[in-house]
Structures are given as C-alpha cells and as structure tokens.
Image (cartoon, rainbow, N blue to C red; front, top):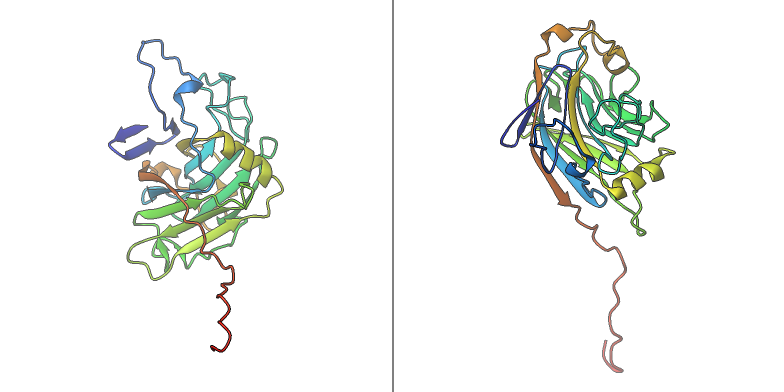
Length: 258
C-alpha cells in the first residue's frame, strides 16, 4: 500500500488503514488508539475510485470497521477486525465498495453475519445492469475514475435510517444509486457507526475464487492482469437536512378586510 498526497494505491493482496498517526519507535507495533473513529451518522463520505486495472478475479475494496474500539490485537497484530473473521476478531463491517471493472457490491454485515445483505451488480445482484455499469457502461464507464458518495442518513432519534451509495462520472448522462434500509442488522451497524469507524482499503483476488463477486458478469478470472487499485480525494461532509414540509399558516385578517 502506498500513499502520495491524497492518493492511496493498493497492490495485490494489500490492505491499508487510514490512521491518525504511525508508530515510529522501530518496534513495528500497531495500537488501536492510532486509528480514527470517524463519526459518519448524518454525514456523507466521498472519494474517487480508479478501477481501470481491476480485472475479473480481483476485488478493489473500500469499507469501514470499528478498529478504534477493538482492544484485541488479533492474530494479524494490527487490531484488524471484520465480519468474516479474517484475523480472528469479528466486528460489524460496512462494505461501501467491493468492485472491479464488471462488478460492484455494497454490503452491510453484523459481527455474526459474514454473508450480510447488499446491492449492486455481480453474480447474485442486479440492482444495476451490465449495460449501465462496466467498461463502456452507459452510466458508469469503469475504464475511467468513478466518484463515490456514501450517505448515512438518520431518523428523528439519530438512529441510522439507511446506507445509500451513488456513483457518478462528470460526462455521464446518468448516475447509479442504491439504498439498503431493510437489513435486519441495521441497528447493529448503526451502533458501530455511532462508536466511530476506521476506513480500510484493500485489493485482493490472485489465487482465490472471486466468482461470489463477479460470477455471471465475467467470462473468466483474469487476476494476473490486475496491478493495483487507486482511491483518492477522500472527504467527509454533513448531510443537508431535508427541507421542512410543515404547512404554513397566516394570521387571520382583521374584520372587514379580505
């Protein structure tokens, strides 16, 4: 994983975390206190993803997990946790992007739900069509950078109402959007977001079966052609409250006046 200004480049089988600091004592030790706990409820998270070298058989991912709250160093030694027990510690996971040139999954997970619930385009998801998303896609041409906005709207009590993702490109005639609001574990995901989450980027697939993501939209796995995934221009912004729809009233007219 490399960083140049606001650009993060992830090579094959790389995983990196956006952190507030970096241990420089030579010990190579990580500590959970160095990971940010982004407060995303009622906010949007924006970035740009370059999937142009993410072929079939590769997964370029951007997601959130509560690493700041995880006090277990894990078998990876870096306090990483997720819903699939990759490093021996389970936690809620909000996958904004698991993607390549032909597939895109957005998925929510509770700590005990490794499969989760999501939408997008891929083997088992058809929220969007292959005509709209992919190389030469009508709405999103994955050969060019894609602007991603993830929104986390809340209800009147401050609880997570949904996770919404929109993909855009400046010259495109249409955007692609999805919303996940009916997941049974939405309250658990909302609790993780309330505690604060750490952004994670990864790129993997070589030597592994990625057909759970891109089966049926890819003819064959071509992970040997995958080089790296690039993401940049990260930003967090508050959501604009919806305009009030309360009826308006006017003062009564004085007697004898219309």
